[in-house]
Image: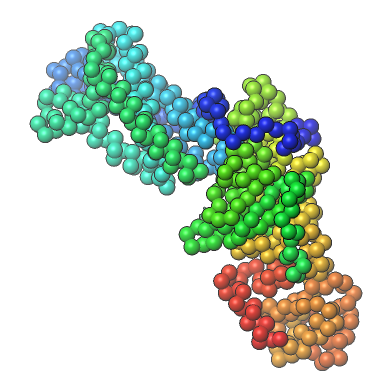
Length: 271
Length: 343
Ligand SMILES: Nc1ncnc2c1ncn2[C@@H]1O[C@H](COP(=O)(O)OP(=O)(O)OP(=O)(O)O)[C@@H](O)[C@H]1O
Ligand SMILES: [Mg+2]
């Protein structure tokens, strides 16, 4: 029994704190686990692959004529909108899967290992950025196929995608929080949809805010999603960086600043 | 019985792997663990024996830092499970009652991830995984997803995962429940080998036989309390090596019958809830002849008589004075009442 030879208490260096570098390394391992899981069960990527394709097609052809006169003119409006909408919707999965994962036996093992407490959480959130990337790439690809040629150029498109991914990651902390406190995975899905639906639709993602009634305009204009959409439009369509981009990043930072600690706290209490 | 219950007073030397004092865990108004004391000496196998819902898993989870005790304290190799939980985690391996491995990944992937989390390098982690898989005869199945694993394979993988860090203390929660006899024997061998290499094992089981085979000391736990503690021999002595079950035809004779049994066997007997059924521990099966003669002399007619190896049920019956399945709250009052009426 060579490999289970015991290392005695006296031979060990025991520390009651986990260092920062260990936390990072543990989180990366957990993220690697997340990627392995995606590779093992690719069917869980259905939503991130299908949603950008279907939504891009549907919204463009349904609203294109009505809003912008024709499809070609609508593409620069709708593609950034759909990008933001799909990538952010994808972040709901983080919470749902976190809940499912936490109910599984393997989480007990993670809890019994001398690893950074936050690693399973951070790893899950990190692994999910791969979904956002897939959704972002697919949305732009669909747009390109339909004739979208962003004036900002490829570099700015990439920056825009990165911006949306960062913001979605920030927002996924909200859903991770629901995931940690909810009892079942389906309730996480339910709560998250209720929060996200009004936010994405009551924004300028699909229609210009000016066409809306005044009381709605008020909400649409303060809605952080609108600022994100505008920032993406600025980047992709003109290659400019404006106040909206800063606002989006500040918003993302605020969300993380609020939700990361309470999620971690709730998570620690639960575990 | 009372001498079995007594444990050594708080020893102050450093070779205790587990010292638990008055552990309590309540779920709602259910006191799942209700003041458990445990002392496990390093380098031994310690068995926690108890029926469903006794609080075995809850106790282990508190000792393994998975649950925070509501009251009481526990130390692992001298380190407090609450205040020094991260140190404790460096000293233990936990194999829970339900498989704690990742279903959607392969055996190798599972072990590699756990190894990486424990700080092993990439190559080192691969080597460790391969070694452990070989040791637990899982090499062939290494690449298959766990969904297709049998219960025994899963259990072995689970144990392998607990040994990556070579922990000096290993918790095994019902390591053999649901295994066929051959696999169970293999598991027993593995556990024995572990202890030979210097490890300490705390295992739970529902089977007296398993505790008998493996454990140096046993704690019997019921309704969240340790109802008996001692070496296997001490416990057995309290129950008798076999147990006698006796039913008589005429319930009116029960007192005389019971007295006869106690006189001949020189032990305490219990009357179980079924009318006219007497249970008594028996050190020597030969005494049954004497008993039968004595009963005939007393003119008591038997309905049924059997001599059995003590079961967990008997251990309970003898130690707690109530059966395994009886209700928690009523049990103690009832057994007192029975004694009052009969004695
Ligand atoms: N998470 C929980 N929430 C509520 N009640 C719980 C929880 N875990 C355990 N219990 C209750 O605590 C009691 C003890 O449970 P525990 O799992 O410790 O028993 P056990 O001895 O391990 O039983 P088994 O042999 O069935 O595994 C039971 O009544 C159980 O219903
Ligand atoms: Mg249990």
